[in-house]
Length: 289
Image 1 (cartoon, one colour):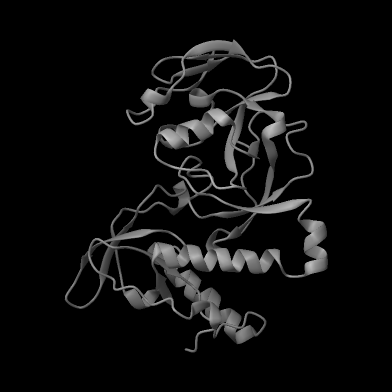
Image 2 (tube, rainbow, N blue to C red):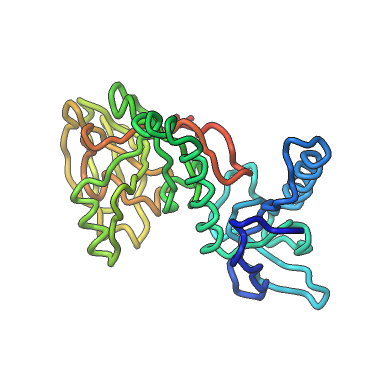
């Protein structure tokens, strides 16, 4: 198999115990416009899915047998329909290519830039209406996973947003302060994503343990120990042009319970499509059930 320029310098990681690795379908000898090659691609994908090895998911290698078989499990929760009885035992050859998380991020960024810059004239127009955003945290698991790349439309912003919708937004200053206090930094252009739990007129009550009610109905239970110190307890009404937002992953989401309401002027847009990884290509579940 001959690699294209994107793979030069991306060495296959040693699949040793304790290492986090990512199985992928990335092969440059696939020509998806050729029926035979497309069939081979889909067949490889089906074999991986059948055994619980999902392209683009981080796996921890727990054991490696003398024959080379790997015992692996995902490093974060998956969507319910993808969950298995972990760990699973697989042949390393089941995946066309394995990558380290850093190399996978590099390849994903390069591919996303390629998609975004497919035509300079079109890009100039499209950039005003759309952006690609890479999910960087586990706060929206299982709806969005770390390193999902989502196409976001920027035309409507937060106008008309209703309960249950997902909003991508520029981090408010209180959220930036929390990131700084935890030793991090927010790069220019970084977008966060949360789900609308309260709109104008909603009365919110946040308890010290993070348990939250909106209009007297409980919408979220207590948070875990890691987030408890960040909770800002209090009661208030959401004003016009504001949103109370929460992450789907209760114990890993620094959201309005911690930094307050989101202003409409801070909303960048709404998700249209998940473009990467290929195994999760498709529309984003934009509303809660």
